[in-house]
Length: 547
Image 1 (cartoon, rainbow, N blue to C red):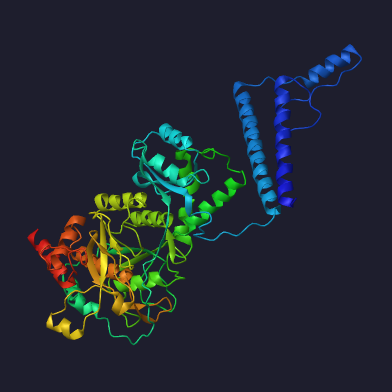
Image 2 (cartoon, rainbow, N blue to C red):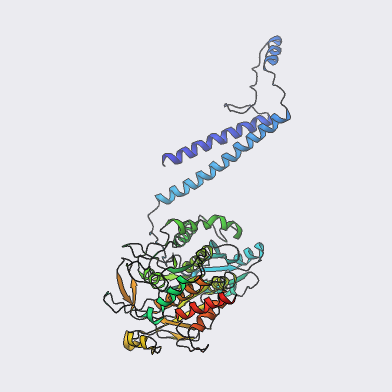
C-alpha cells in the first residue's frame, strides 16, 4: 500500500476519533483520550469531604450560552462530515489501488469498437418535457445502464449500455416509447467517403472545378459586396480533423471530440469491474449531466481539431476554404472560417462521434456543416443524428451537406428538407468550360473505377473527380470522391450566407436551386444540378437590395 493511501486512512481515523469523543461528551461518557472539543475535564475523587468540595469548586464546568452550544454542535457536524468524506476518499483510493495491482488490461484507444461501438451501445434522445421519473422507469424496464450524456437541453443525448446481446431489442422497445423518447438508435459504424482512386501526382491538371462553378467571379462579387465583417461566416467540417503540419494554408481552429469515446470506454471498464453497480449505475438522468459531461473538456484541450492522422479531413477542408496565399490549393470560399471538428482518428466513424460533433457545431453557432461520411441518409439506423440535423435546420437556420457515397448504389432513402445530399460529376475540359458547353456527367466506373451514388435523396451535384486538394503535410494532391463534391457545394452556400446573412435556411436552399439553372427540375442523378457560385451570390445580393 502506498504512502498516500496510508495517510488517507490515518487522517480518516483521527477525524472519526475526534467525532466519537465529541459524541461521548454529549451523552456524558468519559473519554480515555484527549480531544480538541470544548468539554471540561472531570475532577478526580478525593477521600475527604473538604477536599472534595474544594475540587468541585475548582473544576465546576461553566454554563454554556445557547450561541456556544450551537457553535459546538456545528463544529461536531463539520468534523463528522469531514470524516465521511475521508472514508469515501479511502474507498476510492482502495479501489484504484486494487485496480492498479490487478493484471494489466487491454489498453483501449479512441473509437475502439470493442467498447464504444456495437449493438449493445445505444444513443437515446429524451423527449422534450419528459418527466424524470417516467424516463428513469423506462430505462430501468429495459435493464439498461446510462453511462454518459452528450449535449444539453433540447439536444441532449444519453449513452446507454443495453443488456449483453439485447441492443437491437432494446432499440426497438425504446423506439416505440414516444412518450419518453424522441429518437433511439444503436451506435453504428460508418466509413469516410473517400474514393478508392487517389492519385498523388501534384502535376494533375489545374483545379478545373473552380472555373466550372465560376468561383473566382463569385469571390470578386463577394469582396465588392456588403461589408458584413461582423458576421461570423463559419463552416463546421465533421471529419478526421484539419492538419496545420507543413503549413497547409487552411485557416482553422475547431474541436476534438474523440475524447468522448475514451470517457465512455472508461465508464464501461468501471462498470465491468462492478464499480458502477447495475440498473442505471446509481445515477439518475439529471445527475449524469454534471457527472459525465466533462468529456467536453477534451473538445477544447486535445488538439482543437487541428491534428489529422488520416488526411481526409484536411482534403475536405481545403476544398471548401483553402486560402489564397500561395500555399496548397484554393478553396471555393478562401475567406471561409473553417471549424474542423475531429470525430475520428481512423477511416471509421460512428454515431457517437457524429452526435458529439453536431453538439459542438450547435455550440459554435456555425450555419453550415459538411459531413463526408457514407450512409448518413439512412434515418432508420441514425435516428438520433437526424433529430440533431432537424434541430440545426429549424432552430438555428443551419444547413447540413453530406456526400452521397461512392458505391454506385441507387439509394432508396427519402428526401429530407434538413439535409442536402451531393453526388459527384466527372471532369470536363477547359475548352468546354470556356464555351459554356459542359454537360453534367456522373463519375463512372469506366473512367474512374468507382461511381457516385444516386437516388431520390440527391439534392445537388458537385465536381468529384481529379480535385486538387491540400494534404495533411501541406503538399498538393488530386483526389476523387463524393467526399469532395459535398464541401464544394457547401462552400457555395457559405458564399450566400456571407453576402446575405439574414436569409433563412430554406431561402439559402432556394438560392442554390435557382443557381443551378434547371428551373427547379431535379433528377436522381444530379438532384437540382450544379450550383453556379457567381449566380448564387448575385441572387443573394439582389435579395438584399429588395429589402
